[in-house]
Image 1 (tube, rainbow, N blue to C red):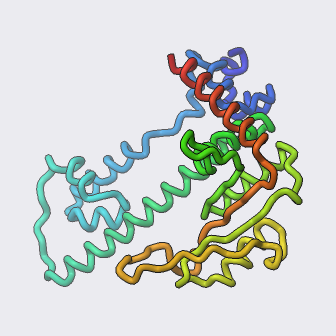
Image 2 (cartoon, rainbow, N blue to C red; image 1 turned 180 degrees about the vertical axis):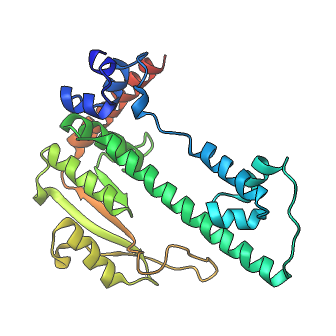
Length: 268
């Protein structure tokens, strides 16, 4: 609280006190307003003022969209009380202006997405071992195989097509002390895809020779189905199996059960 009142930002307080857990930091700063210098101006206010200025100069919605990169629906709300300019263009010219306006809007949206992702990445900070442990438990319970009352299969098997998920999962296994010689890998992929390319892709990701992968599971392709997961970015899924993992599976189930209890307590 004292650091906040001195005018420090959340990031400065985080680095000063070495508190890298955002939830803890939020609770410590609860009720204490952020200093003015850390508050971002409302970009929409500036856009609105500029849109009105351009409208008064006689620009159409399309022309304002090209200039500012915001949607025509927003422009309409901001300038609807202002007089409409006279139109002096052909349908072809209007179509070209509209196309350019849409392209500009998409550029602005892409830049906004990039900024949002970059800001979110900075919020994570350093990941502690405990945080990785909890993330891994949740990750497995969401994406890993689970034993059922009607089919008791206490084996740790994780399947995913996202390479970053596989990397986080492997880091979690390392944190748990699972030896590499207990881990088996297998590719699952559609028969119409580049099977060999996928095998080399996943083998390189997990640091093994393609010959060390188990036999690939080929999924038959239904010609009547229009698949969208195609192209150079499609590598199928990687199956990660832990050998002799019944005890580990029971521990994961226990960890998740207690996490669910604790989450309910916090939400009460």
